[in-house]
Length: 140
Image 1 (cartoon, rainbow, N blue to C red):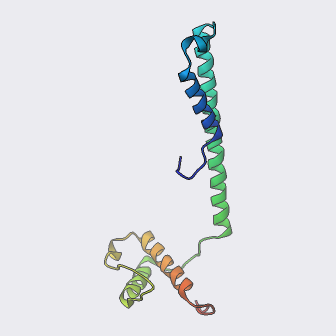
Image 2 (cartoon, rainbow, N blue to C red):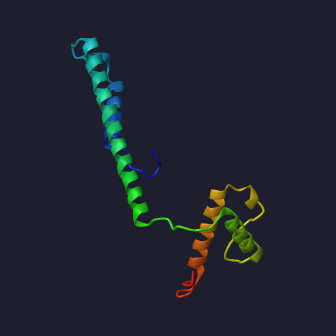
C-alpha cells in the first residue's frame, strides 16, 4: 500500500477483528463450543476475507488499467519518422548549442539504446515546443 492511498475498509475490519480475537481469552472465544469447530469457522472466515480483499484489489487494478488505456487513447503518443542516428545527431546539436533552456549530456549518446535516444529526442521536442512563445513553431 502506498503512503497516500486510503486503506481498504475490508482490511481495516479484518485487522480490528484479529486484534479483538488476540485480546480475548480462550474461554471467551470458545463460549462452550467445540475448539475444532471454532477453528474451522475462523479459517473459513479468514479465507473468505482474503478472497474478497483479493477481488477488491483486482477490481481496483482493472479500473486503474482501464483509466490508463483511456488516457493513452485520448492522448496518443506522437508518431515520428526519425531514426535513432538522426535523433542522436539532433541531441548532439542541442547539447553543443549550450541553450540555457535545456540541460543535456551528449557524451553517452552512443551507449544509449535506440529507444532511449528517440525518447530523449521526443522530450527535447516537447520542451522546445513548450518554451516557444505562442504562435511560433507552427512550421514543424
